[in-house]
Image 1 (cartoon, rainbow, N blue to C red):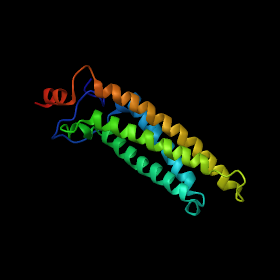
Image 2: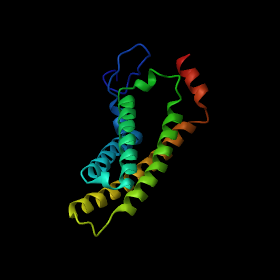
Image 3: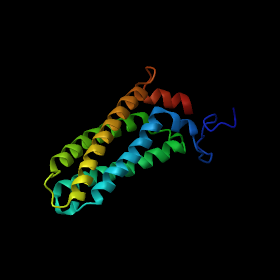
Length: 170
């Protein structure tokens, strides 16, 4: 079992290593999907003349900000860096992050969908903006599902963040 990536745990002084079991977990799969879908949203909007429409500035901000933050969280969990910073209540942080991302992606999706003009003089802008609206909706759903799983992880087995961290690293 020592050869499996998830079999050993990172102690505060050890070097980071890839955790393959994280990729197979619901949280890892959802984070990967959020990274891909968020990339699609902001790249589709960036490929249009979004600077001419103020509404798409908000969509770009939300999608790019949460894409960068999701990639950082993904790398943090993949390399098990969250175990090096054990004093941070990671399940709570991730739950709040996912809840905020869900709410802001709702606003980005509604903004993006409402700003799509089917009578656009540039057909490729219409197609990209409509696709960005669709992917923003799917991304919003993945963040909502992640919020659910993060809430379950945060609640744990009836323990709170302080007692679980003290008993793990005392």
